[in-house]
Length: 391
Image (cartoon, rainbow, N blue to C red; front, side, top):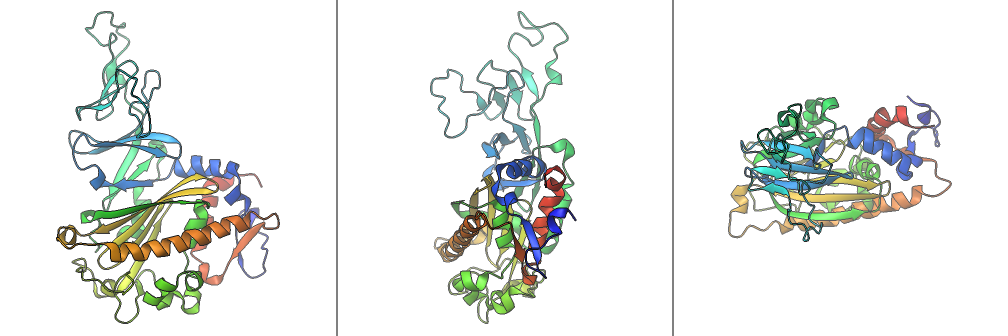
């Protein structure tokens, strides 16, 4: 272990990462390059791009990424940059391109056209036409120029359970199975790929992404912070949240089976769940940016995007069965309203942490014994940026 962890500020308790790693931009830039640019990050759901030619432009940690379905209905992703002079191929939603004669982007659901010189690519990123350079055109370049040799810069794409994961350095990507292996095993009976988004909420939180991960990974805080949650799951406040069986699932109180204010719902349980999963809650943090909370009849998930050392965007989505969503009286508000309260409590306390660790006297925090899962974020981050960080 690095010298960063040899000195503990409170004897007998494990230290956190140094406070500077949550506060300073130089550490955030190391995380951007060695975590968010190189690990598999969750970027959305397959249902958001249901048909060939569907596409969206993503801003991922300062990189513009074009995600689309090709004509064979396969997901593809590319850096949103032309191989000619580097112009952005597709506009972002807030870009003003009203003065451009050629808008560019995905055209007729079959081609990607650069608005600068009309270089044209197919939906697999292959250059198909460069005006006045392609073979057979007047003024064509010498034979050394071959459009077949030119492709858009690719981004790695993988899917699991209906979730889309991207890797921005695909030639050096770790095995995707290493990212989703634990969740894939634990949630094998949940019909994740078949569920659909019923409601979404975006939050902007003035806290470091690691503070949010640490908060999600422990329930020592649940008693003081989440009274509504603990009324449904008393185990969250018992013994400071120690000894919870996350693999089997955490039991609800007697008579409660899901996360609503009443603890119940008229929605049916997902078919195929075992007896424990009918009455217990499961959760998982898929590093680096996907939180998952699974009840018997809905799934809440969160996609985090770090925007700096002290700001994180969180997109919270609620998944339900189409079987339920197709009913005339379907209303997800019982689950959404419950989680919105819990979410706001989490984000507020995480902002308090970010404010507190900014104090000049705070060099690092410590983990209580029931926060052992938080050591995972320490190891995860240190393994990736530690060799590049200054003491």
